[in-house]
Length: 319
Image (cartoon, rainbow, N blue to C red):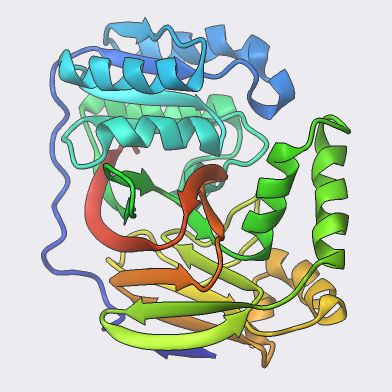
């Protein structure tokens, strides 16, 4: 069931496509993305970008902090474009530098989860995506899409491209990040089992364009795009070009019901369940009666409350 709280149409004030500047192309690459299985593709990706006839510079980034600093410095130094070779986490870091600027942005998906790249029309194959970016660089073309602007009790503004989770999935992520054993994917699987055993509804307060909703639930997702977690279509009707956010809430369900709903998320049919509700709004304010940490694009954001606003045309994609 979808409760629309704002008109469902494209924003007539959306920024038009603008030509690309004359500066160099900065490239942020994460060699560990996708467990390193695409590490050997970087030279080929760089070669495709260079074939577009622009100067290409690989950014130095040994840590996430250094990566974000390098992206901001490249934009400040006049880069015409920033290309992120990695997964959603790498994209998330790069978006912090290009959001709200005329700098072109191109994601080359080599991560475990590549939801923003795929949902905004880039091929899932890394070399094919690099080719799309190179074609746009060659003719100086960018196309605007929306981002979600995130503010909270802490300092500064964050941006995300895909989905913010603030329920069961975020709680699982928080536990997995605290665990030191087991390693790899099994750590996440163990965290799911632990949190399923502890599952209980939390009390939320949510305001959609100023209209208050109070509810008990086990899952809340705020989507600029439809999917997160590598293809889980949690907000299946989300469109990153409509100027709106899609919000999906799973109510006070038990373990059995949640486990029956979860497999349907990959098809996006979970929204047909009577305990799942969908909303649409330009501005979402979310808080909980107890501490819940939000995750956006798979990255830790911090505890609620947060305010999320859809910003039309906040990033200019190279496609």
